[in-house]
Image (cartoon, rainbow, N blue to C red):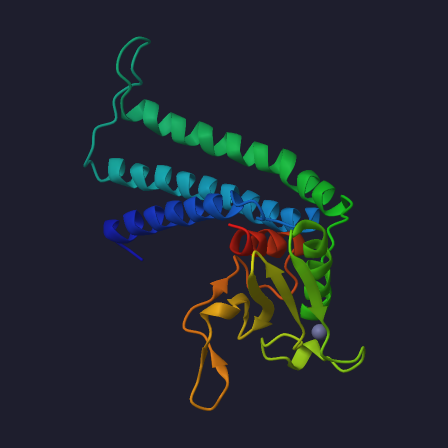
Amino acid sequence: MSDPEDSIGMACAAAETTEASVQALSSQWAVYTPQEAATVAAALFEGLQQNADALAALRRAMGRMIERGETELTPPASPGQPENLANALDRLLQVTGRIYDLVSANASTTVHALHAASTSAPIGADAHDTLSAVADLLKDQCPGSVIFNERHGADEYDPSSDHGFGCGCDISIAVDGEEYIVSHGDSEWTVFKMSDGRKGSDGTTVWDNWGKLSTSLDTAHPQQLADDVLGIVTP
Ligand SMILES: [Zn+2]
């Protein structure tokens, strides 16, 4: 990393990454608990600090350019006049200092307070817990009939070895003359519409398309999954 193309490319890539964070955090289910928010806040404050470091490094790079005699440093502009290089260098220093002050005054207390905040988010321990909670929500919120099909005994499911295929249980929903199956398979939450299935040559039913929910987390917020399912079965 030693030429202007690298410097410009890295600064632009960092800005794009930050923009992606804003997008992720703008979604309705961006964080489930204050503790997750604490982790995000710690990373964002760290990013602010690093941005300040980068502004300070840019200020020093300009100093080296001036030492080479390749740009002219005149006294700062008088009030009302267009600002010049001296003003820009001052501002870089000032902004850097303000960010350092802001981060040191706020980061640690904010992160600790978020971390200590209470949570009642109904997050399950594994895919079975989650599916069971989603079934309870759908029984209240879905206009059709909702059945939770438990397919294993209480001690028969080991989440550490399900290889992303969930626990084998599913939820069947009958609404408006259609039947749907909600399950966790192949590392995603899915909704299969029964009438979209077709009989394969071996007699099993296969689907060419199915509904994929907005998260693949085993321990997703049950209401996030229920909202997604409702959006599919009662559009
Ligand atoms: Zn299960």
